[in-house]
Picture 1: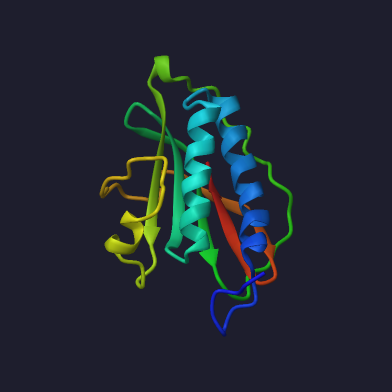
Picture 2: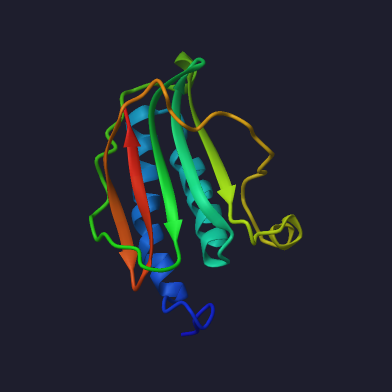
Length: 162
């Protein structure tokens, strides 16, 4: 397996291992909230994984909205070196907030400084991502202990908000 640069020790398989946990979280969110489908969760996970493999992703923010109010949120901050955490996915049994009752999932990505729009344009993404400016500080929610998913230094720290 190849590495991404001389300063990293993780492989594509390491990113895939971490992303299995992120994908499991997204599917659990879809199943408990009914604010998105499992198919949508899988599409989001695909794109996040693809962007992470190419070192384009700084963080992904997943927020459950009810109308214009934030209900729950998770922020996944990606690290190419020194990531720790081996916890299993879970802890995302969010409240039922179905689409037909005003529920929706807002998912925002923040790219790394080295990521360019031209490089991302060539990736086979499944979601049509558009620029967004929503506040992801979750100032009306309370931050709680999250989880970490990692493999050989690559990983994501998950911060939970409720």
